[in-house]
Image (cartoon, rainbow, N blue to C red; front, side):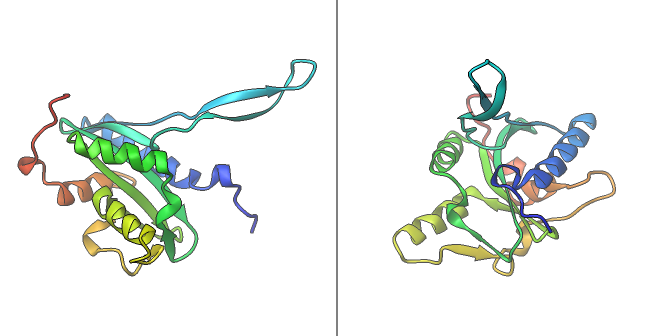
Length: 181
């Protein structure tokens, strides 16, 4: 099996989420989009584009609105049984912290071993990441340690019905809508 390049790690998960988001939008359930990455072309001495580099890192992979609530999340795919807290970059952590403070729903969407999907609330991820930085907790979480209510299942209607998990974790009838909507 070929090694997955760093730039393409997680692309399969992103494609599944994009498909689910298209299905959500077609049914009038939610509008959630992939945040594009800004690329800067690198040219040779003749002006021909020979490569490209990331010009500006996106805050997170996906942004949108679900039932009138702002939603933001990053997708992380891992081939092993554990994922490190530092897979979330500092600029992403800051964004998600500010997002939730402003009333938005934020989480990390994790896909383990091409089998199991989890919606991990940002607050949990952040708390565990801080414990790890203080050397008071582990550097990662395993699939076994994931809470059952975080797991996302496929459905007949939606390829990857992660918003059902969001509904269970953030009951919309008990949330206060953000003032910015």
